Image 1 (cartoon, rainbow, N blue to C red):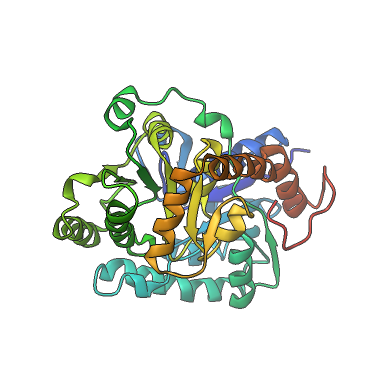
Image 2: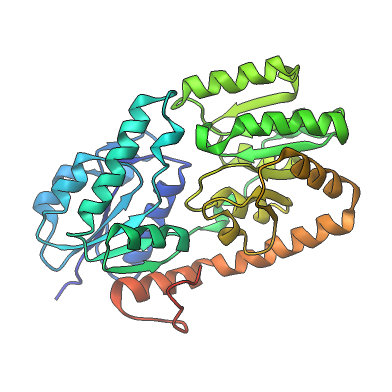
Length: 368
């Protein structure tokens, strides 16, 4: 008798996207367990189209014993339809940015965020299992009404970061000036505007040649992107602030290679994947304690609760002046990555999905 299938759905799948990468990693893992497994989406970007099946096929593919995992991070009518299929259902929650961040900037995003929050509560009545990629997310699932919840972090194949850094990026940005890097799409909740203000402080009080590199796509939030650019210009920082746009693996590796420090002032993170990337590349991290940031960092970063920019600027200065502090954070960051080792996360996921464990049972609140 053949094994039941473990299929997954997300409305849009793309390359170099954390949710998509997580979905494909789970697909490959399920196949290694002996289960048929496919990735389904409404839209597949060209780079991954060959690996994705149109989601409408799910309705004639799923059997009663099959498992459908729906990755959820924004409202979409497809979830309501899929929640009615005659199959076992699970939800993997990547969190929904509070709509208030988009009010006055992007009505479309605000609408879908509100829709997603309402939809999450409705799905709680129909989906037996919900997994948060962080404990922060799991608590939101519990508050939404899901009866059975678990925490399983994002499954990362760290080998995909073993690439040669883009030589053009290295040539442009290497030097002695303090280079503050943040990785994440340009969006109001990520607070790139605050990073620009932080750069003004650092250039005035720490290093007059400091520069800021903002790595991430800005196509989805054009109005906010324009505001951040305008702010940089108003503060006389136009030439010191660089927007990379979306980058490939080689570009990402290069920007981490030239970073003096990774700084996050983001006010909402369901799972702080760029913090782990910074650890992987040996970059010290300074961050605002918001969402799942402190949970993800696990004590391996300078995490501050207050939003005043002076203390973040001084933390950047300390890391510039004290090599011992920098080395302590780099060492701690690399040690923290062991908690997200693929085999450890895979064992936890298998325990949650299939009721089997290849490692000591983790508590509901554990990160990995």
